[in-house]
Image (cartoon, rainbow, N blue to C red; front, side, top):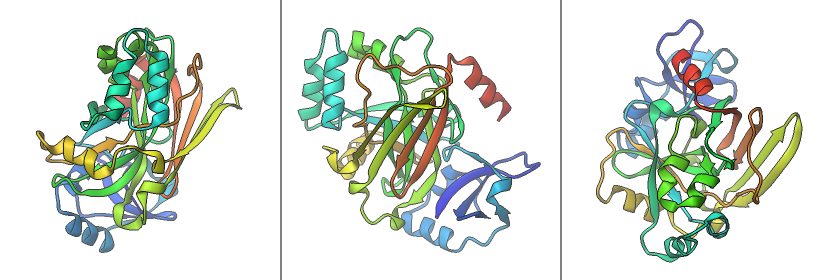
Length: 293
């Protein structure tokens, strides 16, 4: 089962439903944010009792599974490979990544508001003022307003390595921009995943029809626990419509690899799904996508 957000043919307002194979059953809610405002047992009952209008999945346009006031946040330097890559790219402050990796407090940063997020089959962007840009494939924790992990999704936490490499304080510019975050294809309910701490993650980058980079890893290599990341995120903040928390990456292409316009990025997380994106250069194409949506 996947919890999905979609537009039906001729529809003017997104709906929310549960997808099983090729069928989607609507849920009696108006948004993902509404779902993430209820306790986990209530959400589970809503999904189990889905009996709204049925749709053929092939007829629907699927949207990112975030909306309303739901935010996307991310954790950094949570895998050994990420630590090594950040040290390599940093020009002046390599030791800061060692400190973050070893510290009791994790690195957490805001990634995107819901309206900026793109979904499966849509676009991600590389900045025009950056020389080296990469996708960052991550397992996303879907957390409700009560700090309960209610599901999982796939996140592409796009990153400008050349901007952050100059100075770690440039991280917001390297991470937070239009086209810098994709989430999808849906939300796998937590009760359907036996062990999310041991899921395979695969990344493939295709250019002109050819595979130019690939790698795989596992969430078992994550240094932080999910509970630890969520607890720190909720220590001094509230999320009335829930939050998606990307847990960090262990798949970082070696320098000087960079994405190019036209590349196709595919991120697969076992038991969760595959998120695909086409790379564009600059914000204009993403802006057009969001306006059309």
